Amino acid sequence: MAGGWSFSKWEGSGNDFIVVDDRRLEFPDHDVAMVRRWCDRHFGIGSDGLILIRPAIADGMAFHMEFLNPDGSRSFCGNGSRAAFGSWSDLTGDRSSVRFTAIDGPHRAEWSGHGVRVGMCDVGMVDRINERMDRIDTGSPHLIVWVDDPEAVDLITEARAIRYAPEHARTGINVNFVRWAGGGLEMRTYERGVEAETLSCGTGVTAAALSAMSRGLVDGRCEVVTRGGRLMVEAAPAGPGFNDVHLSGPVGHVFSGTIRR
Image 1 (cartoon, helix red, strand yellow):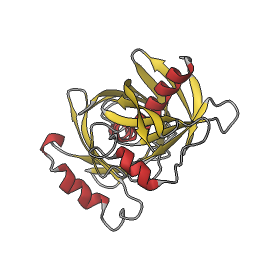
Image 2 (cartoon, one colour; image 1 turned 90 degrees about the vertical axis):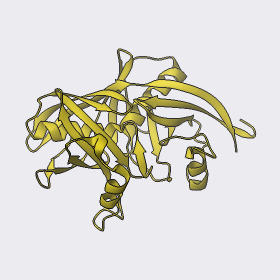
Image 3 (cartoon, one colour; image 1 turned 90 degrees about the horizontal axis):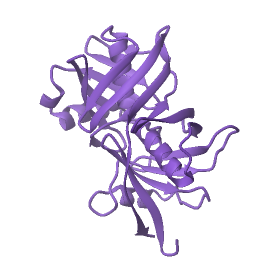
Image 4 (cartoon, one colour; image 1 turned 180 degrees about the vertical axis):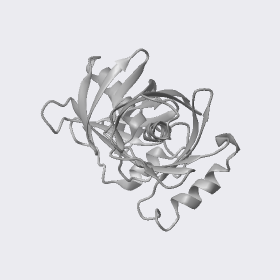
C-alpha cells in the first residue's frame, strides 16, 4: 500500500504477533530497525514477534513462514506458526489442513475445535543437566527449570542470570520455570529475542511437556497452563527423544490495520 504497510494482529494463548501477507516478497525483512520499531509496545504496534506469510519454497507446501523476533533475530515459533496458519486460512478462505515450512523445516497445521494443532519437529534427546534442569531444543533452545511455584519466582532476575551466563550469552536460551500440579504443568517463560516474559511460548510449552514425559510424570499427552491460557502437547517416545510431537491451543485474530512506512 502506498505510504504504509497492511498488517494483522494475531495471538495464540496470549503470545501476540504482527502478521504481514508477504506473498509478493516485498517486505524489507533486512530492515532490523523497522522490525524493532513495529514490535515496540510504546512506539509501534507491539508484539512478541513479526511473521511474514511467504510463497511456498518446496513442493507440497502451502506457504513459508518467516519469523522475526522483536530484536530482528530469526527462529522458529510454535505459537507463531499456529497464528501464521490462522492468518493463511483467513487470507485464502481455506480451512483444510496444510503443510508449510519454517526456519527449522516442514510442519503440518490443522484446525482443531476453536484452536490450531501444529506438528513440531522431532526432538532427538532431552538433556538432563541435573534433578532440577533439562535442556531441550524444540525448534528453539529451552532450559526447563523445575521449581516449587513459578509464580513465586523473580523471573526477570533469575532468567537473565541464566540467559546471559557465559555458556548462553552468544546464542541465547529461553528459560522456563515449571511445576507439576493438578495433573498438568504450570509454567512461566522468559524468551530470548523478546528479552522479557511472555504470556505463552509454544516451543517452551512443548519443551516443558517433553521434560515432564521424560521424567515419568505423564505419558503421551500433557496439558500445560501458561499465563495466557491452556495448551496441549502430544508426543511419542523414541529412544532418548520424541517424535510425532504436536502442539494444540487457541488462536485468534485481534485486529488489522496499516502502519506508515
